[in-house]
Amino acid sequence: MIQIRGLQKRFGSQPVLRGVDVEIATGEIMVIIGRSGGGKSVLLKHLIGLLRPDAGTVTVDGTEITRLRGAALDRVRERYGVVFQGGALFDSMSVADNVAFPLRERSRLGAAEIRGRVQEKLDQVGLSDMGHKNPAEISGGMRKRVAIARALVTEPEIVFFDEPTTGLDPILVNTIHHLIVDLHRKFRFTAVMVSHEIPEIFEIADRVGMLHDGVIVEVGPPEAIRASANPIVQQFIRGDVETTAAGPPSERGRRA
Amino acid sequence: MFPAPVPESWPLSLRPIAAMGRVCLDVVSALGRFGTFFGQAVGFIVVPPFKLGRLLDRIHFIGFRSLSIVLLTGAFTGMVLGLQVYLTLVRFGSEAYLGPAVALALIRELGPVLCAVFVTGLAGSALTAEIGIMKITEQIDALQVMALNPVRYLVVPAIVAGVITFPLLTSIFDVIGILGGYLVGVELLGLSPGTYYGEMRTFVTWDDLMTGYWKALSFGIIVPWVCTYKGFYCGHGAEGVARATTQAVVLTSVLILVWDYFLGSVLP
Image 1 (tube, each protein chain N blue to C red):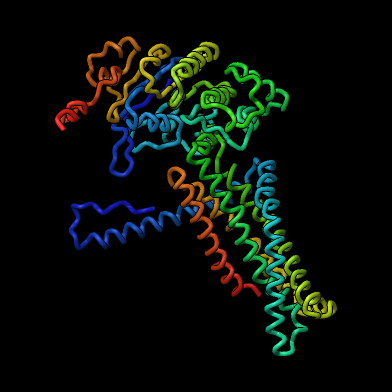
Image 2: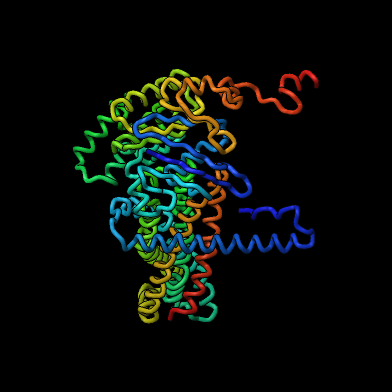
């Protein structure tokens, strides 16, 4: 279980997280939704230990990771797989080398076994014959799938997805979501996903948390979020135009 | 990087002082980060596991890829030296000393310095750009979450490769430069080969060779250190990488000259 308690972070004078409280149960798919620039990726970076909070704690199965450094933090990270927003594939390596990289660096497996594991993961993400290609030679959707294969090749207990479908067309969005669900069913990892793919994520999430203005304003199963009475949640789900003191943009246009 | 703006609530008369204070704090903080970065890299050099594959790759990246530019510039530096020193010495009837003059200038000063500056322009800038792009595309974050220390993985092999390749590249630069001086002094201007090499053996001492070696060795640390540091702490986007690359080349070149003067005044 991942427990986040009172997490606060500011960059200069700009507060980004104002006290995030949420728990993520072992084996569930938790999706954090919220507006762009709302701090979702910052929250995720705290969970994977890339940022340190100004206040608050992140506890992973009883280990408080916010104060850990060096080898102690690495021991926690060895249980992680992370799919970055842009894939973060190493562009100096082939697709197969990218997937093999964590195994070569962190495990004691032999070359033949690593090759087998890499091919198995590439098969699972539908890229069986793409191993020899360079990341620059494949499409955006394929790069996301390679990133998923690399994140899962070490068979992690917890997988973090940072907007894994951003910039993809609706068909690819659904393809990636189904792939994540299939792999989750198979390997039963805990998944923490940051996304603003509404309504698609309601189909795959066990629970959804809405991050707004640096705090989690609502958390619950997808149907509860859909039925939420919170106007902020409803505005985000419906994609309503934000109104200001000057009125909605359409009206402002008419007045002008 | 620009310092944070002074709050508007401060009295007008105090704002310039506050701004200066912030600049000073930023400079001290950057120097601390620069030193800590190097200290961390040095720590990893002596602590296993050692990344032999990465080291060989960096030796190829810094050393082999710089070889052609070192050969070309070394030859022309020696030729220019040969010509200009000959034209000067001939006024005093001392053209017999062309060999040692060219050799000493190359071995003690020009070889290590020019070689380091050219390798900075070629491999150092590429190091900064490569690491900078890795940073802005989250590849360095990816290394960290794979429980791999990016300093150990990216910086240590570059520094060790610099320590290995810079003295070798400098030696090649010196030899090619001396041959360039020979080409001009002996083949074009008519000096005898025996005079060119014979006087060189008389005047060039072991201390001169070691001075050049220590300089090359220290530049082999400075160049990868500064260039990888600038890549690690580059700004956002393509502009951030471009600025970091320019800063890396300029700062490294300045440091090479400053350190060269310091070593030149300390070493025999």
